[in-house]
Image 1 (cartoon, each protein chain N blue to C red):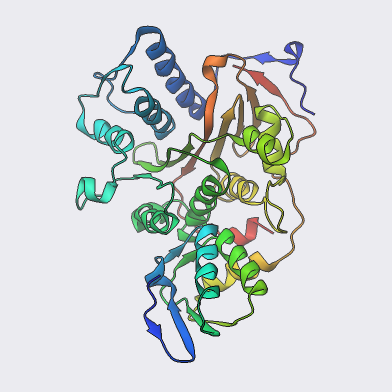
Image 2: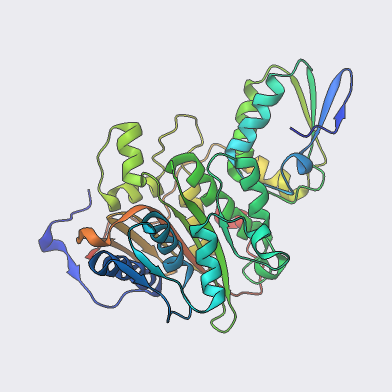
Length: 109
Length: 279
């Protein structure tokens, strides 16, 4: 991974440089945490500066892995848009089907 | 349980255009099996819904089926990108190519390639960047999480005169019913499996999984006033603002080995705020 700032006591990971200004895939969050968990550094700063969009899947996986991780993890530089998706991903939502399945019409082709 | 007995079928001949576009692919594929060739020389254009599964079909069969490419270079370019697994950026230099092959084992590269679809020219006319990227990110993530594909692609094509963008997501993986069968040991036909996926049945065990497809459908149909079609194995789900239809592909030759999701979003001026529709 492309880590730009590495200090004796902490690592700062610039998310835009590692991925792009869009954080799309759940697997990317897994790869990120696999990497930091294999690192001896105990304090990690994730810098979201320049990230303009993030998927709910990425944010959800990031949150799951962060909660399981024993290192000290902080975030910086999140935009309002990114923060909003993180807040949404943390919510326990009731699943609400977007379609009413009670009256299903099946057509044949 | 969706009743699929023959007596319950309603046979119709008028389909939404997204479904016709999928059936256009089936027709070309069936003709290629019958004649041993695919002649696209006089084809002027395809919708992405036809093009992506067709590119996969040509790629899989180019050794044993005679393929005559379209003479129109722009159409041929798209098919070449799929068939030869080209990187659109290196293929076409500076210009915008709205078709991306998803790399099978490199999700970091996939993440970077997706940015190629996020041009302001596109998202600004269909409700804004947040809603547009939401849908693309979630549906591409589903491909990586569930499909086990060998070949997958995503395309976003803008139709200026018709005033819509068509998004298409294709993978030739194990299909939605195949995934449930493999990971949960449950047997569903195509429409049952699509229904379960929309209702949030996940093959993963963590809390908070199984919302990507339902959220995307909701956001497109309610927020962006668009239409969505999901094809997987022998099932089709179709939804626009007012109607929902389920189709069962009775004829083996019309089934899809994999999953295809097609979306049409009309041009609109107002920003669509995803958080007003997903609660």
